[in-house]
Length: 225
Image (cartoon, rainbow, N blue to C red; front, side, top):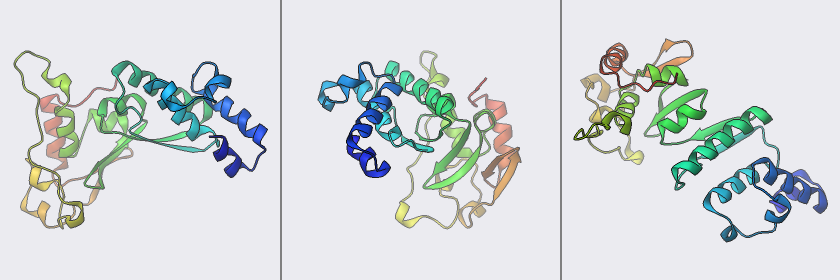
């Protein structure tokens, strides 16, 4: 961390140490003057994750890319990291790009959500609109497969049949078509155009209206209220 600050900020060794200690304290690690001298194996998993966030913040970026920051952490530590990121965003005025496969985590931290499939954005918009009124079948399927929908004894989780396509040989049409219950022949031939479905909310699907009706009828959409 100290070498990084020295290299990018062109400051003295003493200033770099001070910035490293400040960054470690900022993410809630106690005794930062002592922790800055420790090795990773001397810290818990949650503390190492906080140290990585401190490393990312040490050069005072305007945009923070958090790629699966809660992976392999237990539920309690995951919540702590999500709360920390939200607090840092508000306190420092950061823009955070939060990459995750966990829609629940996205709902906790995101102002806007972009849903990607096979490397392409298929739906994007304000978090409450995307999660509360999904208009792409992949978004709808993700919401329906969440564990909260199968909490009754004997009820099975919904799954998305099939497998993702080979990214080196993407089809000419919608990449989700082979797994989609709403697919039309045209879906496999050309890329669906991006359509606006609300304020700042858009999706790429030929059956946007029917997906909206399905999400309302099944009650599968995640409430962000």
